[in-house]
Structure formats: C-alpha cells, structure tokens
Length: 289
Image 1 (tube, rainbow, N blue to C red):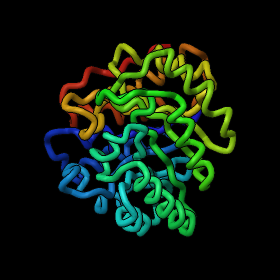
Image 2: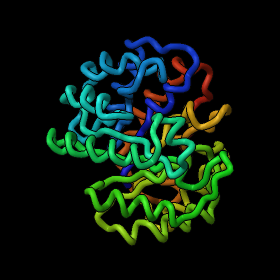
Image 3: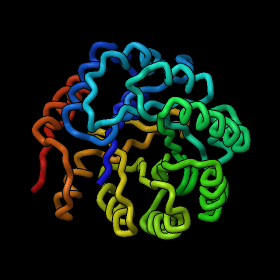
C-alpha cells in the first residue's frame, strides 16, 4: 500500500496562521511515521493561500528520511520553478479539474490552458529529475450543476498519458463520490492506462470513510491520500469545506482488512499529539486492532 499524508491540505484551510516553527515541528514529526509521501507545502500566490506563504522557509528545515518523499502543490510554471530550487522536494503536484468551472476557480485557467501548463511543468520537472503528480479534481462530480460522465475522466487521462504523465490521483474534491462512482472509475480507468499510477484523494465526511476506501480498494486501488482527523479541504471548492480522508480511518481500514503497511504507529500517535496542539482539541487517536 502506498500512503500519502497531507499536512498541506490540512493546514491550508485553517483560519489562524500556524507559526512557521510549528509547521516545521509538525512535518518533522510526520516524517518519522514512515509515509511514502508527505504533501507538505504550496508554491502558490500567498494572496490565494496565506497559510502556505512560508513554504519556502519550511522546506529547508525538514529532516528528510530516505523512504519518504516530499511533495508540494504548484498552480503554474512560475510556482514550479520556485519549488524546483529546493533540492529536498521530490514531487510537484498540479490540480487539474474535470470541472471547467473549478479549473477557473482554482488556477484561473480553462482546461486547455491548464493542460498546456502541465506539459511545461512536466518538462522542467523531468529536467530536474523530479516527479509530477496530477490531482484530477472533481473526478467524481461537482457542485456546479455540470454534467458528470466517467468518459470525461477517461478523455483527460488519455490526453495526459500521451504526454507522459505517470501519476494521477482521482480526487473527490467536495465529497460527492458514492460507492457506485468510485467502483466505476477505478474499474474502468486504470486498466486502460497501465503506465499510470492511479490513486485516491478523497474528501469526505468522517462516517463515510470506510465505504469509500473499501470501494476503491476492491477495484484495485493501492494508493491513498489522507490527513490526520480528516482536517482540511480545498478553499476554492465551495463555501463549506469537506475534509480529507482521515488517516486514522485509513489505518483502521488496513488493520480490519489485514493489509500490510510500514507505518510506525507510536510515531503516528506522537504526530497526532502535535496536531492536537495546532488544530485544537482533537480527541485522542484510538487504533483499532
């Protein structure tokens, strides 16, 4: 199982500014857990996401472990160029939306413009021996009244496959995915593009976690993004944020299904306790066995 923890996603929607030193301390605690990837920063306009304005200061202070890669979000070539100056960043992430409306809201571009931007970012990333992740935002539907068809996801997967994209996260940005849509996408899309690593980046309500994880896993998904307590969500999705897949729910799912993982749960609880201090009054983590 390939697991990504997303403190960036958790922090970006938090109302109070989290001091830079506290961000560094928290990310370094998560680095001890053994996740495959930490998505821990954004090189976007500080006016758009003020919480992430200090990413350039956070990155050099991360005590990187060899088995955990560092990922950051970019929304244009300029952001990618700034991110690539940091040698400890392994992966750039770009949010490409299946919804044209959300593409405008999130990156100020239409889909074709965003596609061209991705092609440029892929080129400079490869030149620096870095990876590029695409988040297929609104992959399971949208709140804007736009018609959702799985064929649109297939269309863009094919376009990006043709230019050499290797990693795509099918993202439920506003928590609209149900078991049927999850099963449909993970059954139809990955088998058509075996050269691409597909994963799940779900935003959902706490109580819906298991059924969504189960639906994706049963159709072959082996890559999951999550954030402690399900904190966060996309500030540009709609007025009410729908949080991330909770990491503790992923851990409990893995244990209930008797699936192997490499996470150090004692170190996870230590990171959880730091999250309590940052995000206020989280209940204690209980690991079900």
